[in-house]
Image (cartoon, rainbow, N blue to C red; front, side, top):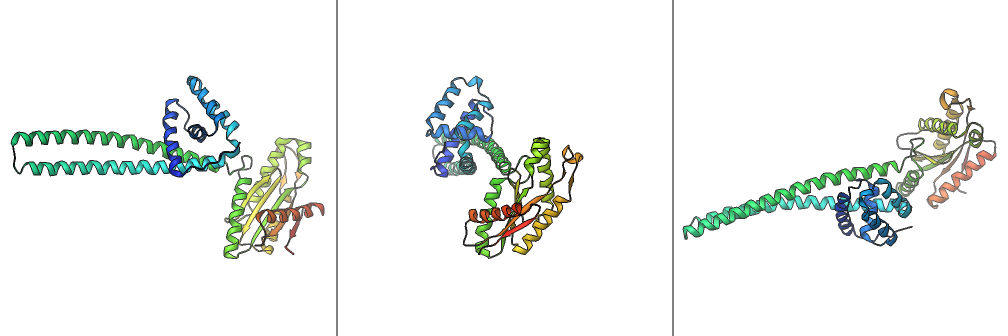
Length: 344
């Protein structure tokens, strides 16, 4: 299910502002899933989700994290990235709003105290003593009440700011984790897609070469079929570690899917990319994956690599397709080698 988020940041902030009391009332965990569900609930566009949340609220003593996780998986999992971005922006807007309220509350207190002092000065200049005394007493009382109210407001807003800052940190943590492959600890397909799009755009501006490597572990299915997926996962981690040693600080290594990896090489011509690819092949095939590493004697593992140089006339999808074509040629011609694809 996909939700179209058309609200302005200010409007979204109002939605989040309404979500905070609900989270407190029902003692819901302060995590992105909770606020994504409450955001949708208050927005009211998703009638099925709204009905499910209301049903939970009727039995609020039984609400726990699993209930909201189930709702999230059912209604929002397809568009969680968009929801996360919108909610995070709304939280930032709300944080800015509360900070502004704090500043204005402080200004109001100071302004009112100054008004009191001015009134005292005026009244001391003459007039009936009883009238002056009553006026001063009234102004002092009003000022005391205003200052007490302002302090309470500042305390409440300060707490809200702390809570929102913690929530923002949590959102950033979840965002980071969503870009990392949990098995190998390197970047995942989503991170690769984002980085490649950015690199392609930048390359068109600065006219620097950009190369892409797609790497596939040779005969990996045989490893899984012979030794099992636990050993297969260990092999993936060992290969990932070997690949990580070959890249520079500005390069990106990511797991593309299954037994495939990708390396984005900004500011690298084809000759340099081929050297990196050859180095990868050498490092992997010379890394004996014995029982101490992967839990079984699987012997040596090799990889095949496809290399492509970006052309301004192509899309990122076409760029990836050319690198994939080069990889296919490397595997068809015997594996454990590097092949390239150039634009003709």
